[in-house]
Image (cartoon, rainbow, N blue to C red; front, side, top):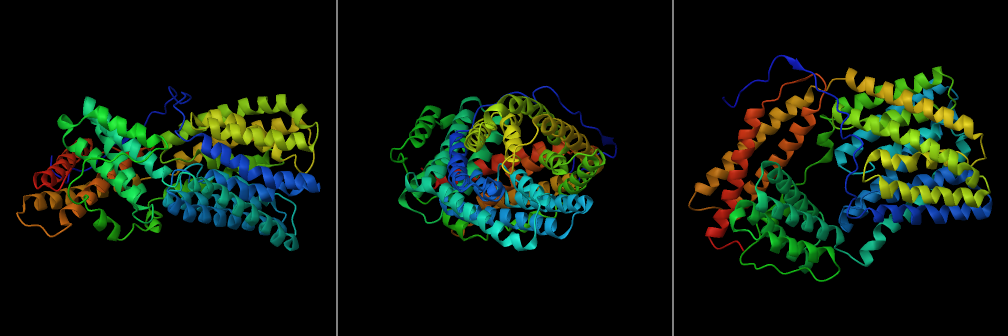
Length: 540
């Protein structure tokens, strides 16, 4: 089969899975960090408003406080920038919602604005790879603000409350850096070492892809960590050892790799790996121009269109049914959209199950919450913690806490009849999930297949360049290292593109044989570049 092998002409329908959708996974290594951070970020503003008797303003402080959920996986230098961007994005979305609410009372117009804002938030979060919880929290705040009674004169003060709480959330997110300044880099390096050890032990194809992705993620984390301190250089040497294990698994010592990973999880010094020579092109990689996030917006256009259409139709359907809070249906639809239709379907099932169980939890807890404003605030804090502690196991499990928390937040301005809240939430959940998923199927993503073709071409070019450099007797300093890193990044992008396209609805058949050949040849060339360094005495 030639490199120009076309896609199959006959469209294929992907099966939508049910098995395993609700299966619980292992919790994140740092599940407690976002859980504790959001409690610390939310509690002071809410307790202050409680003391002042102004819990009706809690929606605006919650907007800023919830920014503490983001960027826990990033090094602190990168986290500072990411959290600042999230805070500004949150305040901007809130501002659009409040201004729109003050200018018009038309529910149709407000739903339309909410859908467009949700699409922009989805595209920006995916393009910048901000990570969990993604656009959902931003959309929840901006959509709820559309239906908050508002005047233009009140908007600046409410935005100031959100910005102040967001500044506090930024401080909360950065505070752990005072005690463990290299924590994110250590965790990423430990993950790469464990993945390399797993591959060295069994050498199965799926573990190879996972290990290479983990090593690439570790390098990206280290490259975004700011100045190259002594600790960071020690971590770089450990990632190099993981790369060597991938290139020569028969010579690797999995037990030693795992021992290093365990030491990194603790608070002790970074273990020192045997090392001789220069690291693999670290300086060249740092000098290379960074990938611009806005270049990813074009391929995300179909996902953004799905989000806009699905959110708008869900909100309109909720209005047609006479529901008082159409933004619930809008947010439900917004929460579904993932990289492809199959993942969107799975998220829809998880959302419905989690919300249904969540309203039962709300029914059980609401008598306690109605004991007084203090009880209401404490219940919300408990659900904030529970949501972040559980959502890493499976989205539906976290939704069991998110749903009662969202319902209780609506009562900050005054207690409401629980039966009506429960009924409206259940109806909006089904409306948002059904209409949102229908929009995902209606808006096809043909670009997913095109991205696979482009990624294949990139891998083939990068592999040919790296192979040519390996064969040359005299190399320019850093040239082989730069080629190796370009090939590694291209292989990770190819695998991500294939996985995204494989779950699309009515997607043309993928060139699986060509993908397998390109990945196998690419990984062999990667190993050859690493072994070339070792042969010249420039590797550990």
